[in-house]
Length: 221
Image 1 (spheres, rainbow, N blue to C red):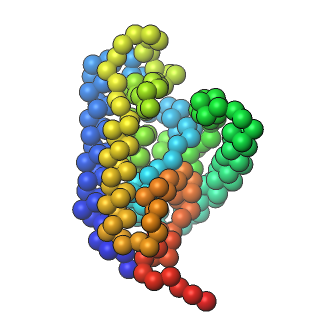
Image 2: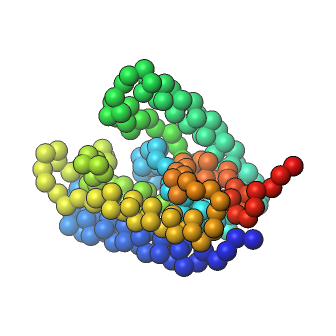
């Protein structure tokens, strides 16, 4: 049985709530530029991975909302299909890096790849909106990570003009700290568990049990 993770998840929710506040503040400052609206799903086609603390939290929310039934099966089927496509894409990008292409060029190419999130319904609405990851919550306003700026192509922010920016490095650092706290709380035998990042598709397909998380002595056949 997993230890109580409620304290760690409460701290994660605080990071998530802060992301909502930053988005709302930017939207209030520049209502003519932040054009997010119900039914727009551009951010739901972007490729990104979740740190482990967010992945475990998100999977729990999914299991609570879709414990069984046809809708859960349909979501997991889409997740499996998406994950196979992602695996092929990542192999191709990895090969391009081995062939000498720069990481910057590969990352730029990856940013152009679009795959629908398995949790999008037939009307392009998120089926787990209230529990959506931090990246989903901040998409649509100017952000920067590793010194590189980004903004949604459907927004009306003017290129070259200065705007308040959400620095995702700081957000990511906090999530990484929480993942390390998770690792310590679990007392995992996997020393590099905090380095695990997973796309939403694989997150939905994974069972985060004692075996997967490395809790307790290793079982031998």
